[in-house]
Length: 274
Image 1: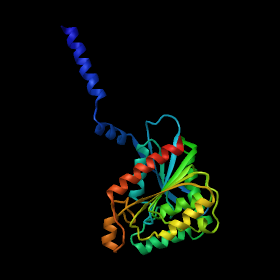
Image 2: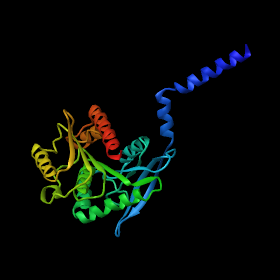
Image 3: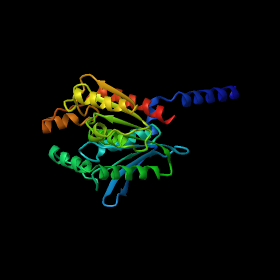
Image 4: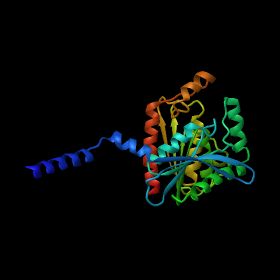
């Protein structure tokens, strides 16, 4: 009888362990994420980024750069880095402005963004400094690197791709499409491109989409456009509605588009890193 009871007890224990709910698994996954601030630099500028990874990863894994919105390197960019770490990647939320600067007003944000990309060589140097920092991390496979960006960051990663950066792929979320390089001197990007945009984004015109498509077609680029009906600019950022009210901006969060675009990214990264 005691032997039977012991067997039953072990059976119940194994069943409970094997049938743990996804909530517990997700919680354990979050607890295993390590996030820390990192500093890196170009010849003239020190930048303050944020590195995130799963401490239980075994071996080297792909790395993903996260380029912030025009507000600067903030908690939102870090959140996306943590989400990528939960997926098993090592992610670096980059700092394109230097010294971790953050804008408090759209006018200030515009000035920061313009200064960062006014000189493409300078912007490229800032991006490459972040990429080299990520590649040098002992947990990262330096031959498997991608970049994603939001708003200003979406413009940055698209520009860097067309400039010919050594990336497996880039994903732009509600980023600007009118890049100087794409329209005037399109390069040959060997990686894949994912562009997720809002169907009601007032900062993007049909003409810009048509021009960029034509440029990418000309070079035989592997790209995909995804448009989300009803979604405005900054549709992935939960704080977008606050910005809209405070600064009277045509932006807004769209939960459905946010979740669908992130699901699109998961498929995209899995494909380019396979």
